[in-house]
Length: 134
Length: 216
Image 1 (cartoon, chains in turn red, purple):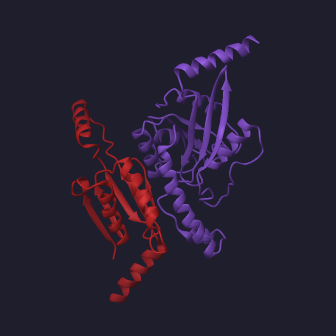
Image 2 (tube, chains in turn yellow, purple):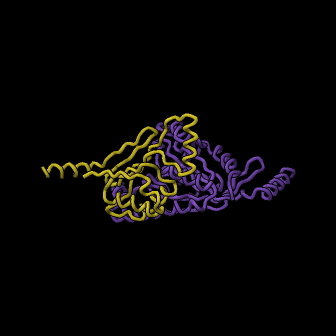
């Protein structure tokens, strides 16, 4: 079954970087696609890559990650508010999508969207299981 | 004679007031973006040697360990920069040994390569704490909106490490330099071909410009 796990950033914000990454990785190892309402810091992203490399094996071969940014043009007042908010709590605009490489063959991102490409073998296995249940 | 004395004086002055003439230059990027090709090109140009720094291949993760070549230098208009060149393994978020099997390796060789590649990625990220300046290699024939590239940029900015984005493989018809520049509008993007030594003079100019931004 394909599961998408929505993870609001405030739920993991108070955790240490390591604990935050461990929450994400445990979801990925459970073959879930994680959607985080917000963005990880670059430091967290680097830590996510490092910790992913540490746990890669024959079963879990990594992840795909993409971030959708808020690119809407802002008014002058909105820009000021955005900068104040960023200075206080960090840049939380945007959505982060992370999926296990076992499920996603590729994750393409561009300024407007993130496209998920699923592994053919995963889709075939999933549809076979669904068909057999019927 | 006068030029020599002038060079000595300029070098002394630079060392007195700006001790960033000697720095560590790292080459970072996704696998197969041409990092080692560039490293080999720099060694060939600056050390005047045909010896390769590292092997290259079309199979990803050929470079699986950080390699350092010390004391390369570039001179221009009486000024000189000296640097240690650091070639790093490509940073990736996934490593699948089956990709190496499809490229012709045995399963055993592929698993060993995959294991080494994961260690290489970890080492690359750790070396971010040891470099003073970075060239971020981006394959100009591929989609530049790669989160790995953005992660590298973000980490360098957080560490206040000056960097230049190098759009490589501009010799290929499928390269899209403008797309790379659009993806990184706030940063210096230079199109080169490391394989065919195109625009390398501009890259060396860039080293002089970035040297002033190094904080030690």
